[in-house]
Image 1 (tube, rainbow, N blue to C red):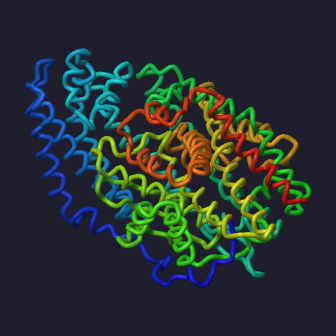
Image 2 (image 1 turned 60 degrees about the vertical axis):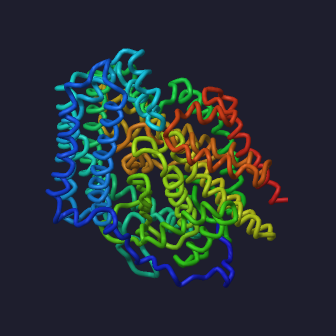
Image 3 (image 1 turned 180 degrees about the vertical axis):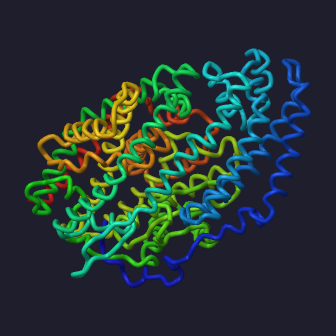
Amino acid sequence: MATTVPARRRSRHFAVSDRWNLTDLLENPVERFERHLADLDTLVTQIESARPTLSAAIPDKAFQSILKTLEAVTRGSSSLGAYAYLWFSGNTKDLNARSFKTRVEERLAALNNRLLFFELWWQSLDESSANRLMADSHDLRYYLETIRRHKPHTLSEPEEKVINIKNVTGRSAINTLYEVVTNGLSFTIRDGGGKKVVSREELMSYVRSPKSAVRQEAYTEFYRVFSAQRDLLGEIYKTLVNDWKSENLSLRGFSSPIATRNLGNDVPDEAVEALLSTCAKNVDVFQTYFKLKAKICKIKPMSRYHLYAPHRTESKKYTYGDAVSLVREAYRGFSPRLADLVDQVFSERHIDAATRPGKMGGAYCYSVVPGRTPYVLLNYTGDARDIATMAHELGHAAHGMLAGHHSVFTFHATLPLAETASVFGERILSDALMRQEARKDVRQGLLLSQLDDMYATVLRQAYFVRFERMAHRMIADGATADQLAQAYLAELRRQFGKAVTVPDEFRWEWLTIPHIFASPFYCYSYSFGNLLVLALYRMYQEQGQDFVPKYLDLLGTGGSQSPDEMLRKLGVDMTAQSFWQSGFDTIKEMVIQLETTLA
C-alpha cells in the first residue's frame, strides 16, 4: 500500500497526539452520575407503571408510547456506557476510569433488569396480536421481530435478572481483567543498537520490518511475553467458554455454542457452515500466494515469521497528516457524501490516534446513538497498514452516520453486515492508490499489501472460528491450555500446508486475539464482510457511479432489516457456497495478476 505522497497532499491540520473530545457525549458524567441515573430511573418508572396495561388488547397508541420511552432509556444508558468505555479505552491503567466503568455497568444492569418484563411479555404475545401492533411500528418492526426470534431460548424473568447481574461480575469483569492484563504488557526489542521497551502496538510494527531477523525477533518476544501469562490467560479463556456453555447450551437450549451467535446475527446456521467450509476449501489460494510472495520478497524458506514481510516499496513511514489526507481524498473520489461524514469525525475531534502506555490496543469505531458522530480509536505508528486501518474504522463511522435516521434499536448494522462499509473503505483506498501508480514494482507492492489484508481478514478469521468450535468442545471435555495450544498449532499448520512453515511458538497466538475471549465466534463476520465486499466492489467496477447510490442505500438501512432481506435485494444468497466461492475467485484473479508482475 505504500507509495510516495505528493506534496499537495501534505497537511498540518491534524496531529496524532490529539485525543478525542468526550465532552459532547454527556454533560459531566462523573460529577453528574447520580443525576443521569435519576433521569433514567424516571423513564424506567414510567414504563413500569404501564405494566398492568400489557395485554393482547393493548391499544396501539399506548404500545407506541412505551416503545418511545424505551428508546429514550436506551439512548441515555448507551451514552453513559459509551463514556465509561471510551474513557477506559484511553488508559486501561487509570483506576478512576476502571472504577467508573464498573459502577456504570452495575447500575445499568440493575435498570435493565427492571425492564425485562416488557421483552418477556412481547415474546409471549400471540402472533395475531403481535402482528397487529407491529403493523404501525415502521422502523421498529425488525427490532420487535428480533425479540420474538429469541423466544425459544428465553428464560423466566427471575432467571434473566440473575444472569444480567451475574454477567457484570462474571463475563464482563473477566473480560476487563483480560484487557487490563494484556494491554499492560510491555515488550523489549533491539532498535538502533540498543534495547527499547515498547507497547504491543509498537511491537507489531516490527513484524512488518524489511529485515527478516527483526521480524523473527518481534514475534519471538511477542509470544515469549504472552506465553509467560498462559496460565492466567488460559484460565480466563476456559472460564469464559464454560460460562458461555452453561448459559447458552445448558440454560437456553442452543444446539451448539456457535448457534447462539448465529441467532443473534440473524444468519442461518447453514449460511455460516457454507462460509466456513468454502474458506477451508480455498486454503490453496493463499498457499499459492505466499509461495509467490516468498519469491518476490526473496524469502527462503517462507516462515510464519515473514508472513507480513513488506515489499521493498513499503519501507516509507507516513505522517499522520499524510494518512488523513490520503483517506479523505480516497473517500471523496468515491462519494463526496461519504467524505463529508469522514471529515466530521475529524472536525469534531472524535478520534484518538496516538499510541500510549496503557491505551487499549488495536482499533475500533464506537457508534453510540443515532445522530451522534461516532468515536474512532486508532494506534497510529506511521506504517502503510495504519492508513488502511484508518480507512477501515472511518468506514464504520460513516456507516453509523448514514443510518442515523433510524431508531437507536435499528441503526446498528447486524454483525454480518457490520464490516461492509469498513472493508469497502479499504478497497476504495487501495483502488485509489493503484490508479495513481504506473510503476510495476509499486503496483506489485500494492497487490501484496491487498492480498496480505485479504488473508488476514478472510481466511485467518475463518480459522479463528474453526479453532473456537474445536476449543469449546475440548474445554467441555476438560482440556488444558497446553492442549488447546497444541490443537491451535495443528490447525494453523493445516491452514498453511507446505507453503509456510509454522514455528512452535505460534501455538500461543490464540491467547493474543481479544475477540476470541470477549466475543465468541465474532470473527466470521470479517470473513463474511470481506467476501461480500469483493462482490459489491465488482458491481461498482462494472456499474461505475450508478452503483454508488445503491451502496449508500444499503448502508443507510443500518439494522432495520434482516441480512437476508438486504442481501437478496442485491441478488445474494448467503447459504450458497457458489456466492462465497465467487469471492475467492476474485482473490484468485488477484494472485494471477500478481504472478504476471514477475514476467
